[in-house]
Image (tube, rainbow, N blue to C red; front, side, top):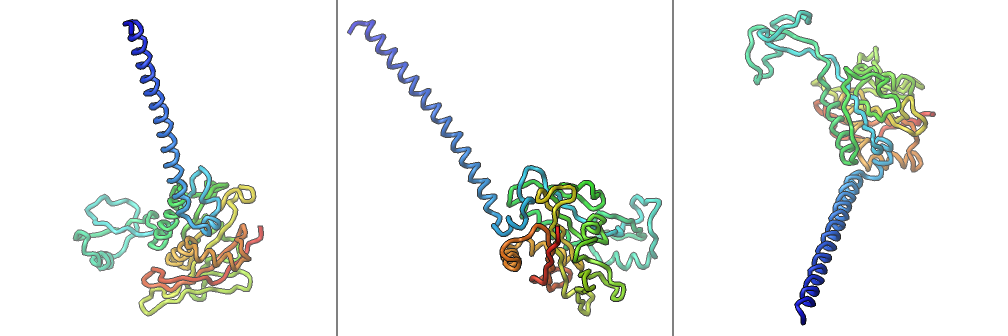
Length: 305
């Protein structure tokens, strides 16, 4: 073979090798993109499948869409005890030092102090309300949706108009929760005769009362779940859920019921197989030291649109 022919053949083979290399690179790139897409699809599918169908049906719009679900958690006014040696605000409640020291010494991890003062704070949620926040957050995380916490001290009703929202806490600690329940069949109100908060059925003025043991801790509590269309939105566009109760253990019981596929399946069965757009569910639970031990369905009311 002539040298020119050998050179042409070598160049042709080299070109073929380079073409194959380019094609392999292209196919490798395409396969990488497809693999990444498949991994992403599997990830999000698994995230979505982490929420049972009964929960997904009940929570509805809360578990879909790109806008964040707002979780509003209320907090009662607390008195924050601190040593007198720290910065003391000018305006503060005054309590006898003997009483303060007696309470202070119940917590041995605190540093000793000769004098103490108390300072009001609205930043301390109750234990059951905090547990309810954790339960709600886990469901939202499993569904792969974004969510934001709004403390009661900064929350206002206009901020939640036409938004996806979960409201936690009693009406006495949250103006928003109080307004959400003010015209509904079931609410949480103070019973002046019993000097206790209880769930009230407005029609018939029936009270569902907590029961207390000898140590003044509630042994039976009630949780109240309220589901409604968010104010300011069209029918079915957004959803607001209120989780409250006779105390914070009741709110936790409401959150546990609302995140239980078994309980929600039973609830749908009681309502003819499909949950309505707006309704309320009363949950009864035994409790120990402000923590619910078990829970179950008590009654429900369908709210007219």
